[in-house]
Image (tube, rainbow, N blue to C red; front, side, top):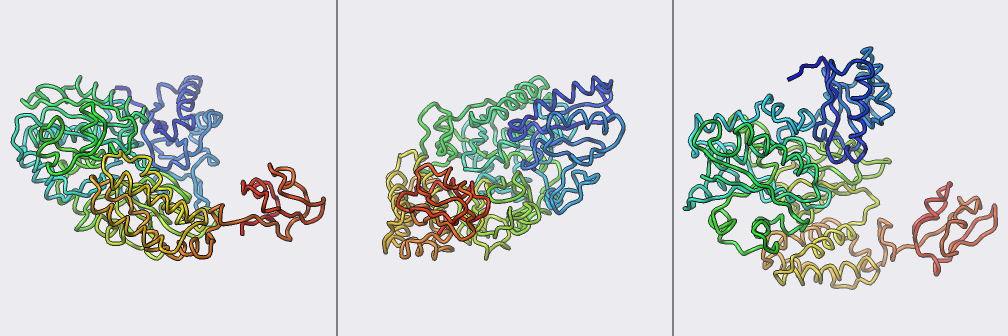
Length: 596
């Protein structure tokens, strides 16, 4: 292994890769060789650093200097100044508008100060394609300890004592789930990793697999040892090519090192892992549908009981956890249950990873201790709402979750507290909305997603959600009627009580939570035929105010000739012709065109 005086870490996650991180790596290698520094400075392609809004991201160690939005032409300056002369390139150092850029390192960035990175501990730190780097950060040490010092039951006992709850949405105690599977009779059992991340705006599992795939492999092997399994499957979306490639590399290297396969670490324990690619069906995130898909059948859920621990993959006892759940387990086995319980809350120990997106300044991946107030995530970590807009709501839990209003912004983030207010943790999507978002249309958007993704196996989900969507479509188009809200609530309750799987049962949640907290918006749409957020096109028209200077820019851009007027005189819009494309608003330099 080669030793360097400095390392240049370049984010190689999906976000930064799509922004040209590969070209940066090539350019760094060229420039280092040009300046005869290639034997002193190493370039490392890592996983996601988390601050996706600032990508492509480059960090130089040992200083820890955090460069953001780096372009290929910036590489020459970083190498010639920072790497050759030791002078930090101030203009490229990341800074938020409220922060000073000079000499700022990763630990100085407000985005990271309030985080506790456990599942993401190695993401952005190691090269995920080199197993030696994972091992250098205590990788596979937990597996070695378990195989040589602990019985399978002792492994499960530590997990039960830790209080780790499943990070895939349900929040079921992980140790208890493992115990059920261990207690199920059968010589053959399976370990399954659910990496079928289908929530809109969610990319937590993808980032863990891209940045630290061996943590998941080690945890699956630990699970295999604990429950008595010798075979595992990772079910991952085919739309995650970087994650799939790094998993393939990690599995191959683990086999070469004797960490997967037969006689692991010289013991009698055998365990191997296979990858299965999903075709993108949202329903395959449900555990019984996922297993049906692995078996080669159409991905549809099955009634429970029997539960997977009793009768799962190929009809045999199976344990299934999601990526983030597995990513926590090696550290728990290494550091102990009390260490894990020292983070988070009594009911929800540990941390949670969120994909923070929507109307927020710092979009990206964050990991905070359970119980952290929502306000801290949105303002201290997320940097607040762009353009000085007012925060309106945040949607958690994806299509199965709910919308949390501004009045509840101080709610602690944990499983039970979110359920109590009509939302849920879900897998970790967190979409922020501002004053311009129409909550009726937001509910319609998530329900439309559910209708499109319904497998159609059960009538409540197949028909009930479509009936709800039809009502919402009428409301946002100005054709809502008295009694629509009551009908939505009746349908939602019926679907919740009778749908076959958890996805169908929770599909009405976005609608119910928005009716609960934003009922006045629904009533304005229905009774006044008005959208308070001025978003729903059928309920608004465009108007030119006296700010108009008669520059004719709007006249020239209108595709349907709806704008009339003379140069240097106030123009007007014929609402009977206007198609509300808003091209005129985008073109107006004086802010003279408004939505009414």
